[in-house]
Length: 138
Image (cartoon, rainbow, N blue to C red; front, side):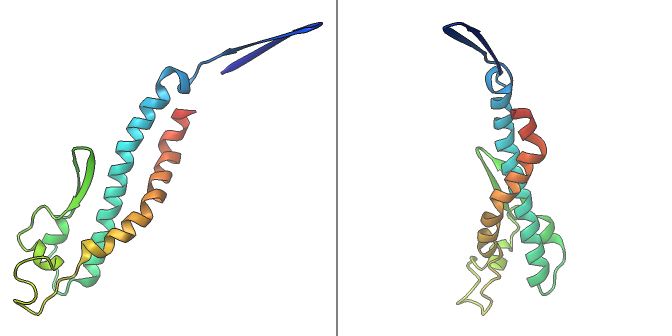
């Protein structure tokens, strides 16, 4: 944005030329790209949190379940899931074979880590904004 001022004895006139990313659409395009990228970054961050927690709680890990935890773009949202591994609901504690059928109540990994992922989301998104998108919007 450029400003020009001129002054005569009793008259001031100004002219403002609107140019740059805010006015030619580049900032809007960058903002749209950022929203999608931020959702994926937060999702990938969530995957790492869940995998670390599984490493901590699983008694006999094979790596198969952990390797199936992914962040997937579904429509307008990013979802973190276990790729429908058959024993996923049992490990989470939401399956039909959990308590009262067996004593195993599940690890509740997704449910417990939801709060942590939510708490970290703004920080992860802000870091991405500063690192890759803010310059394009100014």
